[in-house]
Image (cartoon, rainbow, N blue to C red; front, side):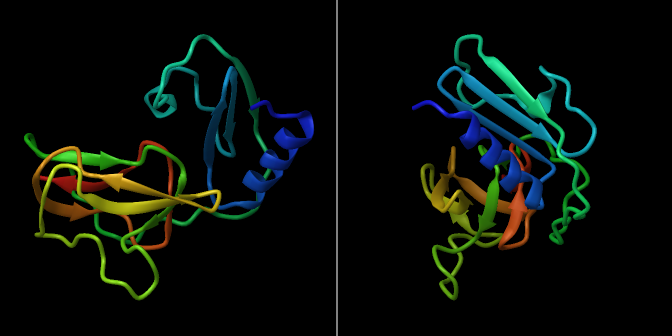
Length: 160
């Protein structure tokens, strides 16, 4: 799949109108990184890729935005203690704790979970992505409020 210049411009317009401060998209050899705030240097911890493809072209833009980004209202622990595993966002999107509005959440703080169990959903571009537990344990913290935006690499839950 290849992106045309019009596709890239449309994506940049959608990002500019969103609440997100950072966005990264990889399609084949093309890599698009957009930061509304200060530029993020390539190779910084926040620009890690899920899959490391061969060297690629980078298109970076810094759209102007007057919208302020929202901050999650859920409480965050000061630091993640040793032995606990953070569940980080593998993509940019909207964080959901339940499969649909009004349904019970996949997990709550204090729940015991199994490896591979669905913990949450991240909606990205109208696609619902189930995020599964990398190991068995107990949910110690939920760091993002339901229906809030989440950025790539952001910690969302903590398993002990």
